[in-house]
Image (cartoon, rainbow, N blue to C red; front, top):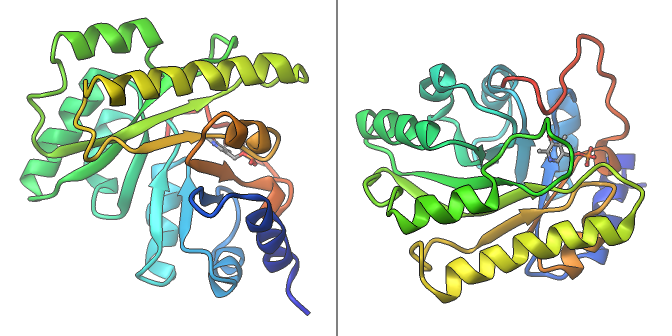
Length: 234
Ligand SMILES: *Cc1c(COP(=O)(O)O)cnc(C)c1O
């Protein structure tokens, strides 16, 4: 009998096109649950807090790809760099500059996604689409040689309104395509469109997502205890 986590992974993978990456969001779940998913073949895991990521990573197999998906404070960049394969939640130019500077010190080239604010909620982090376009036009990202901008990440509104969610994902896909077709950021690395969570990933995939971030549908509901909202500082 497959475990509950293994069964959930199989069920979700069956619904995903083969070229869409499944990121298992393991925040708040113990290393044992992550190991269980690993044993079922899962290799990419997402955490939203630096402390939690760097506490769990050494307990688990070395070939796991860790993604940071929560807001990152500049003073925590250095400690997380040795562990992450992709920082999805880069939401300011200042953070890009800090990741670049700290990566240079460690002789690393760090893969990042730019987080874009597409939801109606004001609390979500991210560049606005307009702000991002302006920065790209000003070549604001070209100076940073120790970061690779691998794509965009976005979260839709927490809403029951499917049409609204679809519009938000469509808007991010349009921005992603525009950057690629005009080669505004180097297309050789700019290839990931991270959108979709447990509640909305089928819509995100229809809209062109290449990476979905799924937590509760794999690991079950989170027990927040001391509070670990994705909008808290990582
Ligand atoms: C927690 C989280 C997810 C996963 O959420 P689920 O609804 O549990 O699938 C995805 N993306 C981000 C940025 C998150 O913080």
